[in-house]
Image (cartoon, rainbow, N blue to C red):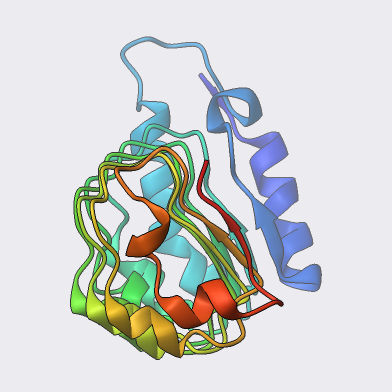
Length: 202
């Protein structure tokens, strides 16, 4: 037996306010039959339906669902401005997500992402990017195209250097890089000299 009452209500509300929180699906949906569909399969199925059910969605929260991949249908939610995929089990970001060019906030912290493709440069409207607590060993130079960024969190990774193109991030106010293998000389000089940028490296 699957009780979808609460999730149906959230989707109905999302049609009006364009905000949908499906984090902690285990707490939203009750599945009593152990042989029934799993929570992970259920959340992925719901994601495939969202472009039809909520085509104007702006804010989508999918954290804490043990997701290992995101269905490609998410790429049809072209009006998304805020996407939270934190605390899942993602190993990479799909091209569909990297083509959501209206995104202003993207949180993919606390996953298992080892690398980013140069497609990250597509997200030119991003203002806040949270990549902390992954397994990143490098940041692509295309990060320098995200000139609207005001906050970049890449703490708790395995970074040993930063691309010089980060000098283009002149609107950056917060840069979190602690718990990597970085020292202050690894940070682009203009960010260090910019009095408006707070750098947390310790």
